[in-house]
Every structure is written in structure tokens, then in C-alpha cells.
Amino acid sequence: MATAWVALPAAAQTPVESNPSEGAPDGAAAPAPVQAAPAPAVPAEVAPPAAACVPECRVGFTCIEGACVSECNPPCPTGHTCSQRQCLPPAPATTPTPTAYPGHPMAEWNAAAPEHNPMNPGAEEHDGFMLRLTFGLGQGWLTEDVTLDAGFTRDDSTTNYDGTAGTFSIDLGGAASDMITLHARLATLAIVNPSVEVDGESIGEFDELSISATLFAPAITFYFMPVNVYTTFAIGGSYITFSVDDRDVDDVETDIGYGINLDVGKEWWSSDQWGLGVAGRLWWTAVVEDVDAGEDRLSMLALTLQFSATYQ
Image (tube, rainbow, N blue to C red; front, side, top):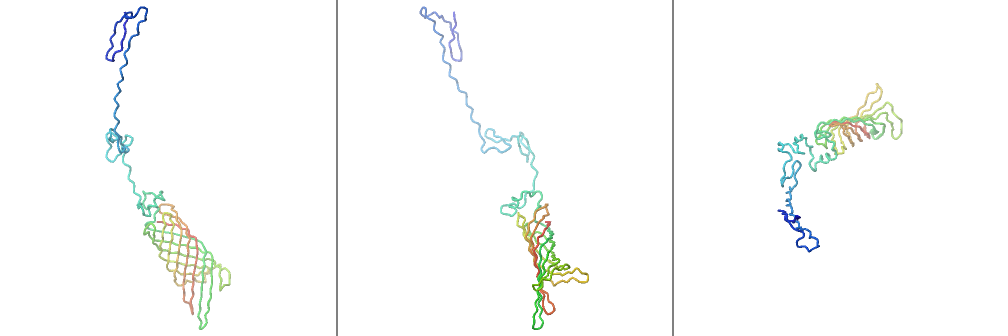
């Protein structure tokens, strides 16, 4: 007796006994066992999509079921931030960069000079006390016109001096702003060993003669930032001195006239407070003196290249 299996639903399968020779004609092969069709597969449940966080969570938070939850558990203390599941203390406070609002001159200055140290306010700025020392070399000229009246006659004489000129000046003052400094100037200019010409005729070089001018004046300096280019204008009292390298000859000083200095230069910061620079200087001194039966007019002009050191 053989046993045949009939495919049934997945709930149960029962063996059925059969006789392969029953119902089959003589000499015919027994029919193959009958198998039932497989039961249809039941689709698995599709999980609903996770709820997203809109807008996205900021650094230190993660999205769970549509809510931003701190990555740190328990939450960080007040003032601390969560980063990569670690509570980090607050960063040390820094001093804000001064005067950087849009439109302010310092806004462009800070953008063009990021090397400024915001931890040191006042560094590389024109503020507070100002001291400037300069020295320079160039060329100087002096013209002296003497006019004498003797009765009905008039005698005019012109003497020209020219030679190498050396200058020195000191400025003391204070800043009204980063771009304007008010100060006083004491300066001197000397023409040494000048060539002399009288009424158009050259009489040679005077090796023992020096002609100097002294200026004491209020001054103002304008800085153009952030390039640190400046111009200085000084106008005040000035006089001229003739000196001969001979102990038996006294120096001769003129009356006080007026003098002008005009400087145009540029400085580079060498430290937080000191700047080194170069400038061109125009010097002008004019003096009128009364002499016996006439007057003596003197005018000195010089062009020099100045080297400066400024503390501010």
C-alpha cells in the first residue's frame, strides 16, 4: 500500500492511502499524484515613513519622530553646547573690534588690515599723544634783496645763495581722531657752504658760511586711512641766521618773519605704536628787515626728503 501527499493549505496536510491499480485500465500507468496550487503570499506590512524635522535641526541636535532632540543625554548645563555627544564649555569672551559699523572709516580699515589685533584696542591707530621726529636732506635757495634810498637815488642789490640743505624737526601734540592730529612744530633748516651770486655775477662758493632758518608753528596732520598716507601743514614764526666759521665773527640773526612747512608722506607701522615713514617737505621762510636808509628782504626756499619716526 503506497501513501500519497496532497498539497493542502498551510494549516495542515493529511496522508491519504490509495491503490495505484484502482481505476486504471489494465496495462496503463498509474496517474501522478495531484498537488494543490501554493497559497498566495501575504505581503508584509509597509512601515510608515519617519516624520522629518522642518527646518533641519541645528548642530548638537538630532531628529527623532519629527522633533529635534539634544544629542547629549542628559542635556548640557546652561551656556554649554553639545557637539558630537559631548558638552563643550563656552568659548572665552573676546573684545569686539571697535568702530566697525558700515559707513564708518574704520569699517574699511578693519577689512583692509585684518592683521589688526582686536585684543589690543588702539594698536596701529592714530590716537592719544603724538611725537614725531624727522631729519632730511635736499636743496636750499636764499634770495636777499637790499633796497637803499639815498636822497633822490635808489640802489638795489640782489644776492642769491644756494647749496645742500639739511633739516630736522620735532612735532608734539595729540590726535583729535584717527585721521586728524593737532600738534606744534619746531624745525630748523641749514644751507651749508653755499654758492653765491651777486647781481647775476657768480663769486664762488663760501666754504665757511652757513645759512639757517628756524620755524616754530602750530600744525595739523591729516591721515588718509587705511593706506596711512599723510599731509602736514605748519605756519608760524620764522627767522634766518647767518653763521661764519670764525670765532671773531658773531652770528647775525634777522627779525622774525613767517615760515611755512608742507609735508606729504607715508608711514608703515613697525610696532603697535611706532610708525616709520618718508615724506617730501616744502620749506618757505620770508623776512623783511628795516636797515639804514632802506630795507632788506630775505626769502628762503628748500625742497627736502624727510625720514620720520612717529609714536602715536
